Length: 421
Image (tube, rainbow, N blue to C red):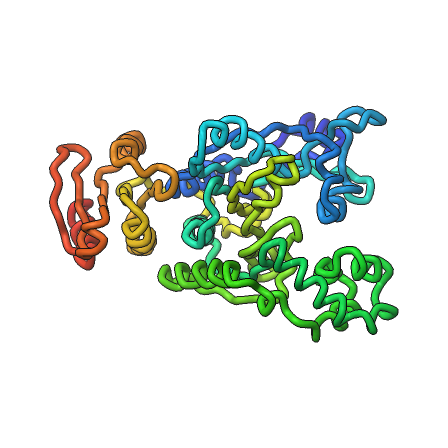
């Protein structure tokens, strides 16, 4: 219960405080479950800065569109710093300063941190949840992020959701497609809204993001960007689709998906029936964001962003409870083994076995077994390149250290037997 004194204080704050209804389950129970599931996929938590430089949000027309008018100054009239409306830049900056500076390295990070914006001059506060794979944007990294996100949703109890994918191509693809779109829409320019008419000259692709029904009718018959992808971007998209097909993840290819134009290549969003939240979150390739910070080289970044509030409101009440302990830890060694481990990890979860992974960015068997010990797992399943080819798995008893080799198609049965399931 929230006593009246605290409630009164919350109502007098300039920024709204997140108050959980008295009939809802306690948020700390849901938080425990959320952290457990995310940790199972090898993401490490970081704490981004609560403030950001204002000038960053003026460096790209799409950032101006998304955040330009909604930034909340820390000190009114002194606009160098604002309360962060997103922590994407803070995450990338931290990676560049603390990881990339030592050389190429893949990191899997997540954060759950407050964000503040000022839509319509009324402060709005929520808690941004971001999942990131930094240092790799291959099709496998994209598939793993989508798989992790989908499994996190399922583990939390969100069963009715849809994954929609598209590709925005690279900068060259976007430039060529923009010229094609401008040529196609030139005769229709007088029927576009004022903003889209301006975008037609400066950034034609932005017209796809317009909410005006008239503009959407006009652009509906235009060529689609997936038909303008170069070979590299086509290969990247097909690689992601093939990998998530292998994982049995249902999806819809949506060529008119309204993703952020600060993204490139593969983009995706997760939607649910309107009754439990509509669009829950969006993700994809965010490599362009590093260039906005002034980083000259290519920094591969895959990410997914939502809010704690959207997630919690989408989870059935009966599933907002603490989860089971982690029983099995996946230890893949090499790219072929990684693909096998991703599928096996999913199958273990679907068989009611709580498992964890550290598939990207932690390839040392010693480090992965250390993580298995830290998570107090009973069993580690080791897949090397030889095992991947032979369709076998090494089962390691984490208490005794004994190891045995089993056929891949028998391993779930053996794990269940050892766990007494």
